Length: 134
Ligand code: CMX
Image (tube, rainbow, N blue to C red; front, top):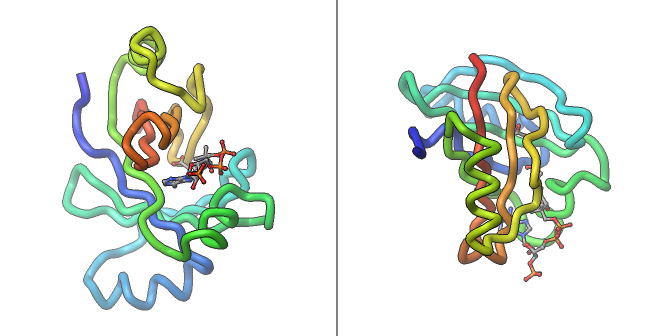
């Protein structure tokens, strides 16, 4: 089952510049890490106890997040939903004809296993399924 919203990914050009607003809003940074395989630097800001905002800063021009910002500007990039049975869920979605970006989970930020569904199959939203391991 889908358990909850894990995080909302927001594409930003520069995490520190964006944090000026988010700290004024009253949110605090839990951690910042580089996910080299995704060419992004990410900051997690808890919203209550269950959900986080994930600021995504590209670390190279080839980063998918850099391409997103170039095309659409800064803003909401993806929504991540937490599941326990990630591989089984991907297999079921594939059988149901949903286009997957990742047919197998891969390591994401915060020690999670993640997989993306293609926006073409979701009505234009980039959806991430993740198995939180913290
Ligand atoms: N939201 C909505 N639509 C999006 C999108 C997004 N974030 N990113 C791309 N698209 C759309 C594109 O506009 C394009 O649409 P059109 O064909 O109508 O122009 C289509 O999806 C394909 O996009 P693309 O970039 O040309 O295609 P790719 O298959 O190369 O890549 C994608 C698509 C979504 C997988 C990739 O751009 C991406 O964003 N991957 C995820 C990267 C990421 O967020 N990593 C951080 C993970 C950190 C963590 O949470 O752990």
